[in-house]
Structure formats: C-alpha cells, structure tokens
Amino acid sequence: MNLNNTKGIKINKEEFMKNRLKIIAILFASIFILNSCSEDKEKFVYPLWEGAEWVDDYYIVGKLDEQTYAISEPKVNWYYNTSYLILGKEKALLFDTGYGTSADKNIMSIVEKITDLPVVTMFSHYHFDHIANVENQKSVWLIDLPYLRERTTDNKLKLTTRETMQFSSPTVTVSKWIKPNEIIDLGDRKIQVLNLTGHTTESTVLVDEKYKQLFTGDFFYDPLLDYVDLADDTDANLLINSAEKLIAKYDDSYIFNGAHGFPKQSYTTLKKYLSFLKSYKNKSLDSKINLTSTGFQTVYEKDGMRITTSTYGGSATNQLIINVILGLVILILLVVFVRKKIKRRNKVK
Ligand SMILES: [Zn+2]
Image 1: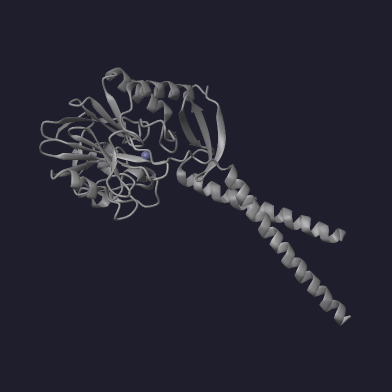
Image 2: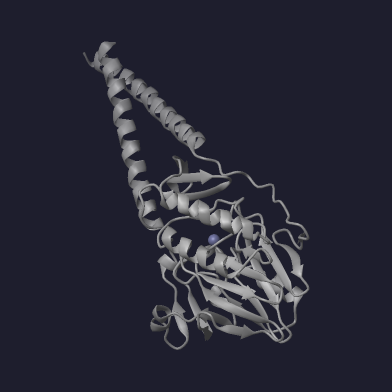
C-alpha cells in the first residue's frame, strides 16, 4: 500500500510537471498569436525630408528658408517629431522641444549650434511628445487661456496628466503670456499666435506672414504618419471648425509645417484633411479594430489619411486600465480552460 501510494504521488508529480509545461507553452503561443495579430505600424526607414541632414545620431535639421529651421527626431518610432526654430533679428522662437529621450537628447544642444540669439520657447500643445525637458526651458511663453492662468501661481504652472498624457505632471515656469491672435515680434519678423482647438484645448498655431507659412503643431501634420489620435480631449467637430477657419483665411501660397513627420505640407493636403474629418463625422468611413501597443484601437482610413480612436473610448489611462483588466480576464479564462481540458483527459486515461 505504501509502495503504491508513493508510486501514485510520483505519477501525479510527473503529470503536474507535464501539464505545467503545456500551460506555459499555450501561454507563449497565445502571446505570440496576439502579437502577430497586433497591427505593426508602417516601419519608417528614417526618411529625410528634402534639405535635411543628420546633425548627430538622433536629430536631423534642415532650413525651410533663410530664417527658419526644422529639427526632426526620425528615430522616435512613428512619432517622427518635428520642432521649429524661427529666427528674428533679436530673438529666436523655438516651437516645441520635441520628444527627447534622455538628458543627452536635448533639442537645446542643436538650437545652440544654430543661433546665438536669446531663445524663447512656445509649445504647440502639452502632450508628452512635444514638451521634452519642459521644466528646464528658461524662457517659456504660454498661450494666455483663462483656465491656464487660474492654475498659475508665482509664474509656475503644473501641467496635468491629462494635458501631458503621461503619468508625471511637470511644472512650467511661465515668462510671458501671449493672448490668442496676438502678434509677437522677434525683430523684423512678426509671428501671429492662434489658438486652434481640436487636438487639445490649448493647441497653438503660429502664422508667419514673412515667409507665408504656418506652424500647425498636431492640429495638422504629415499624413504619412498615424494621423489623428482622437483620444481624450481631441474633438473632430472642433478640428473641422479650425480647419475651415484656416482654409478660409489662407490659400495655396502658404505652406503648413506640422509637428510630426515632413514639414511643408500643402494647402491641398489641408483641404483633403478637412474632407476626411467630415467623412469621419458623417460616419461614412470604414473602420477596423486593431490590437496595437496601446491596446485595441479603431482605425478609420481613406485616401492615405487615418484616424485612430481608442476602441473603448475615454482617456489613455482608462484605456490602460481596461487593457490590463481585459488581459487578466483572458489569461484567467485561458488557464481555467487548459486545466479543465487536462483534467478531463486524465480522467479518460
Ligand atoms: Zn504629437
């Protein structure tokens, strides 16, 4: 009896080890399948836009005209952030500090190589991929919106996680407030500051009449990239209103420099963008659900333009929480299913 018992335990242990291996193998297989289902965003082979050159192993820089530089970060996956350095006779205006990655990938090291002028920084909006090193920017001019002013004490404004789409909330030291539509003078170069909502509430667009160009932030950028992430406070109706305003006010003699991908987008592309947004609003676009690195995303696509929205809606944080819960539920169900199957097979044996 004792002997039999020992033998029985031995068999169970072996079975248990076998089953455990099976469970692990199935888990790995599921992860592999989920991964291959997940949509691989088109891989960029770091294309350079015309006139751009690598200035180190991270940034590319090119001149848009005699007094304007575009500084891109092609290696940041599909983000391909592009920030702008706008020079006047007295001041330089840096529009966005980009994605950055660490202290040594700081756009100021590039800016200092280009100009000796005092630099002021403005932001197209406060999402994390445009405000690298924001806490250390010396002279920051912010768009003067009441809800931002109200939160500012002693010139310090703590950004919210909703504004940055990040878990951290950095503090900006505000040197100057610029009213919407105000014209700032960099010295023989006047720049108008617009507040064009849609992507975010504080979304800022700069207009340079001297070289007939607009700096459009994430309101409108290179359609080669993942177009608009309609998440959180991004609103299609507001985007449509803002696009209509620009189309009415400017024409095809202007170029549009967005905050991702290639600068110098055309007025024609802006018009195409507007009609795309309208199709989205009218629900006349086909959609598909993709599993991406940020969870399930609904993708709407037409004529090379696309909008992605989080499939369950809500903020990035909600999305993350739902993804984790969903992942856990799938995992538990999978384990229960496998264990049941193994038990049943053992019974049959
Ligand atoms: Zn962005």
